Image (cartoon, rainbow, N blue to C red; front, side, top):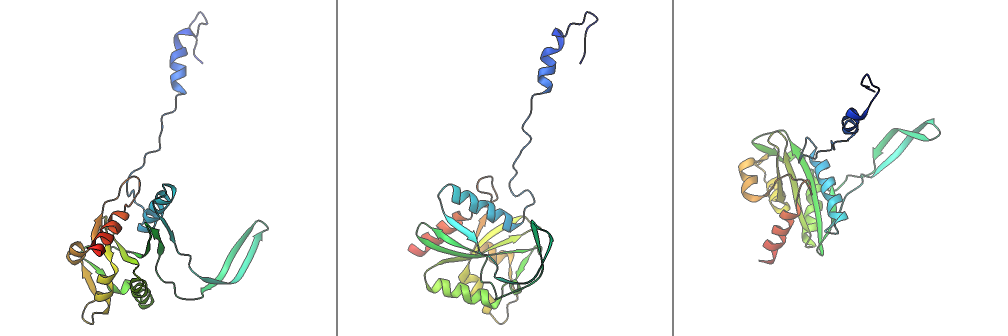
Length: 202
């Protein structure tokens, strides 16, 4: 508190009031260092809240073996194992179409290693395609901060190729839909899905 020699506060009342004014500090930057999974999860939440699509990350099936209870209100899993191989990361529905896709990241700048896909994932994508699902891989080049939605057919063909260990960035650019991180949604991957649906109709 500051007073004039007369004891008056009048001259400072406006300044004191300004001092308590709160300036919003929450600023949302696209991408902002998030993992590909975090960006997809935020986008899924946005699509769900807006009634645009219902897409969720699949839970990983695990068998819990040992649990400790250091506190009554909290349990700590000490030992667990996978009950079965998981399929792909995400599935859901959009405009009557079943969506199924896998999310993968690489620090490489020129190519994406196909060993990042597992046989059971390739089989699952093939099975979903056979049922007319919209299937693809979301590939993130983290060093470049570039993201692509690549049709599952391209992934399957490349993975099964005996002389191919990776897809070059050039190949991915030519076959995929590049996604630009934004605000809402964080990663607008339904733009790619719209194109896949259009291509199928044509």
